[in-house]
Length: 213
Image 1 (cartoon, rainbow, N blue to C red):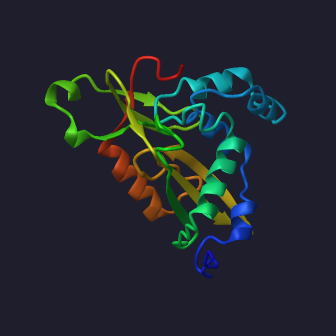
Image 2 (cartoon, rainbow, N blue to C red):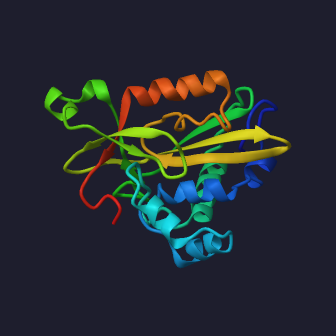
């Protein structure tokens, strides 16, 4: 029998009522290999334009394979089922909660997605000289981007949540290396903002041919 959720952990009610606002839905599109017609329609109904959607699909970064998820809603459903099935009980740290979920290679033989985060310290000097920066759609933040021949495959997925005004907001869901969200003073406290800023000043997003296909 599975154990019950601890009082200081993300509970079942919170997990089943996660709030995904329009900004978060659009952000999650940037972590999908492709977007289903149903997923597109849901965004159109929220007055998100086709150009905004395409900008996210062209964004560099980690992506979930289409076999894993093809819409923001499908991605959340996949994560929720895994958290419950694996009896994962992530703790709240103040009003933030970070989940890391592993998936079976027997079910997803080719991985669940790509890992597109690398430490700058792991790069050769010749690669460092070719680094570029790119602005993240919808944000004033510019991330360092490194071009590679092929992606790294992963069986891990991460989800970052924030508790506010009686709701649990989804901030992001992404495959691969665990990392804080991009620095954003609109929802991060001073310490959390500094943590994100420090991480992304020493790491880069990996881009490769056909990353957005």
